[in-house]
Length: 446
Image (cartoon, rainbow, N blue to C red; front, side):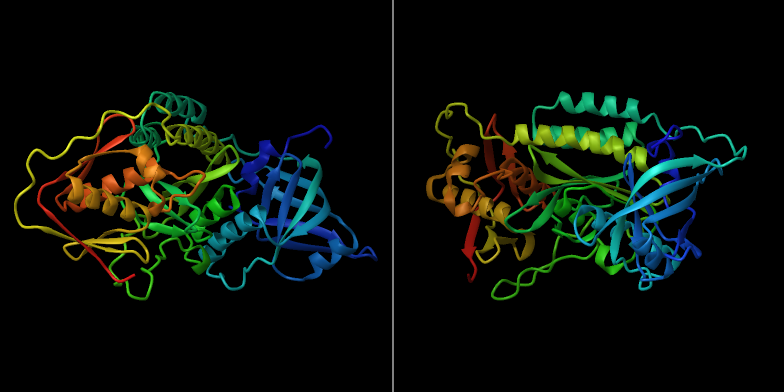
């Protein structure tokens, strides 16, 4: 590109607040001018335009790959003309999914979700950016000191020594330094193809244990494509409606209630950023707001940086403990008394019910039943993370088993459900099972 504004410096023009205008020419030189649904920032030298119709605009640039796009800064009212050269069309992958999610929000906001279906992402090289004459308005002051907020949050995370501390520090930092009131962290269970909530803030219920399928909603897409997904307008598009829930597997397992998803009923802004460490997606940091355009490109940049540190810290804290085994775990001095708690476990999906109330499923459910069986057989109350990792019956994956996250999930669910069963930390790499009453463990049909 020649001297002039950089594409990064005018990213506010690409937020989709105001429609852009594109001009193309047919092979015979006949011009055509049309409105665009979306001009998407790809990187400092490329943008992508939404391909929704095989119209005159598309016919023209396929015949003549040059185009211009007129965009306007929604705050300063300054116009810029982008001189573009068509490169390719993408119909799958991270860029396509990010544009598809954002377009779903725009389309729903305008009441045209069916009309606005995305067919592809047309990628263009930006050869020149031309500022158009005009005084414009002064730029708006930054809504937050994002760099300062990032530094303060980073310092809080650096002091954490456990996964629980790390997640609570993150949520507190988002509230206090970024003024983000609604947020959650979800971990990826890759073998199961889903994410599960391990921490949240700003909702009536925590939703810990609620699940999202890989590829479902902005959260699932961010995890599947390992890319941030951001929507600035309210959306009810079915494909990106993150409030859809999975039901328990059919068959012999009972159809008990799912853990309610904690998200806002009518969000107007959403941003999901993947947690990536050493090339692996560990989960997703998700934030949302009741206001339109609450999360823009600068917020996306800052939260992506924060997510990188968070993912590295999670990876470190969830690594296997190489310390020598501690002394043998203690046994109950006196068995608990009272009316027995009826715990039913269904091996088909690991679901666990306590006194007929649904508690949890999957690996976390299998872990709880292992602890209860061991306690019933030997009176043990303390267990090491190492022995849980080595127990093949729990079906932990060989790589990135997220054991600490699953134990934290189980601990939170037991605490919230008030069943009389508790799980406490008993030192580094150890957990303690606490029972307020005897347990009657039953195995459901497989």
